[in-house]
Amino acid sequence: MRRYLLPGLCVIALVLALHTMTLASGIPASLRVEALEIHTAAGERHAFKVHVADTPEARGRGLMFVTRLDADRGMLFDFERPQRIGMWMKNTPLSLDMLFIDAAGRITQVEARTRPFSTESIHSREEVLAVLEINGGIAGKLGIRVGDRVRHPLFERQPH
Image (cartoon, rainbow, N blue to C red; front, side, top):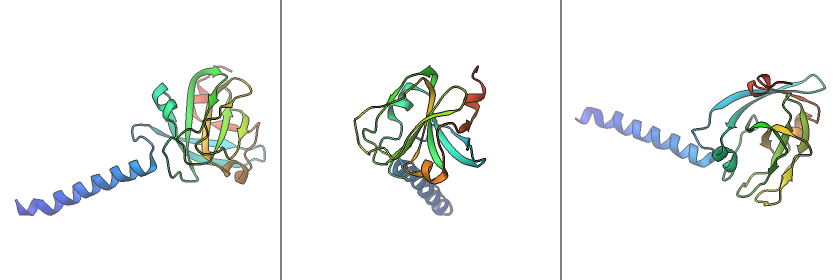
């Protein structure tokens, strides 16, 4: 029995550490993570790993309570059909860049460095299929602008 004690404790410690990391980041572990690329008008490509929020519950929570987001990470909100949408920063301690994206994968609007914890609505100016949230300031740093293209399976399966 003693020979299993140390390996068992190691497994428990690993599970607790992983659980703590998930809690610390605040992003639900149940959300799938997918690759996404942004192709800029200047010919640059920027790769991200994004958590996909494609249910009402996931979209409603978004990045609330998330205290840390790596520079190459983000959350892609899939709204299922093109529509005008509103977002807010309630319970979100990070400043974010919100990239509004139409069904063709074109960035139509960039709301840079949103205000943490704000309950003010940020509305799309036109119908969008998705919103990509990344760390505040990253879009400017990488030269991401309106008109740039987002490559992700969500936009490939949409009729244009």
